[in-house]
Image 1 (tube, rainbow, N blue to C red):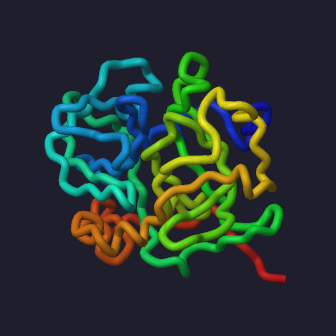
Image 2: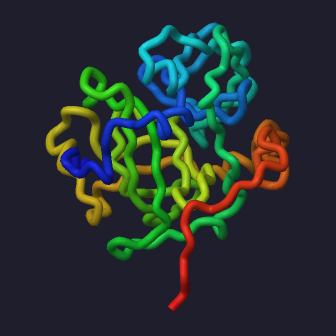
Length: 240
């Protein structure tokens, strides 16, 4: 998990945490003010109360409640719920501007230090009493069917969290699991270069092709909630 590497894994800042929600030992990602995407195995149900990332950061009360489970699929390990705010939505709240609709939108590589840089924010057990939320980043390593494997140091509590491409904040995968559970032998010694330690999740295009909700929210791969907002990339890449 490279806990000492502050670039790879650190306490999430005010700019990093608003993507996410926290509930019942899992994470999720807000797609809009009324939609949350998470893992099916997290078993979200109607009436569950959730903390937005901002409420976790500020130590305030839970500010969301699940009102309906719109979709769920055990094999793809995803669920989408409608939610309502029980307090005013934070002004800092953000949502993924894009979603990956096919594998051509990402670059994966098993070569060291290659593959799109991606990140997630969640609530891992190992930092529950130390950090309010954890930012972790890594790279996309390879695809297998609908699963995406990556070397982000995720652990219990990250399940259901959205993983975004750092270049443009495109939602590309939902965290499902990893090779080791919290406190299992060597759980905190995962190597970014050892394929036996890479974690995985469901690629968003597999969900998108099945999900009427995602097609409606991201009809052309772009989040309709953001309208015509200009969304520049965060990095420029020059060919040599």
